[in-house]
Image (cartoon, rainbow, N blue to C red; front, top):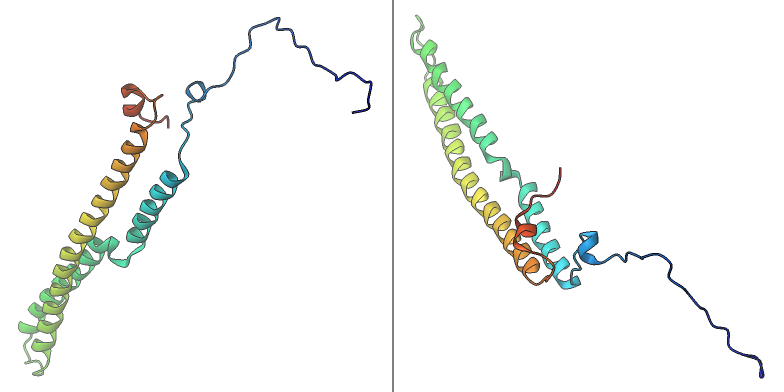
Length: 150
């Protein structure tokens, strides 16, 4: 600033009320970066579980049970045929029926386990969100229980 010159000043006169945006009025909630990353890791883990091939084990189980039923019902016309089938036919149908039935049962068991893990992940994410919301002073009980607009 040149010597001898006066510093410039700015004068503001308020003629109308001014509304300032606050986190409550904007319906925003500041999040700590560590909380954001923690929830992000939980969601990524859930995404990995949903991408796993056994995430849709019920579809595989239904497919295997259908194959077992088809092999089991396929024995009936072979058994009622007027000419005797070769010696390998009955064991082949029995093996096909038994193995696909076993695979269907395994898919049901693994599917239940995968569903339990998914449910645990979802519960954990909900608990994390509740814990994060509990640290925010502007949230009231009615805000926390409100469902977001569609």
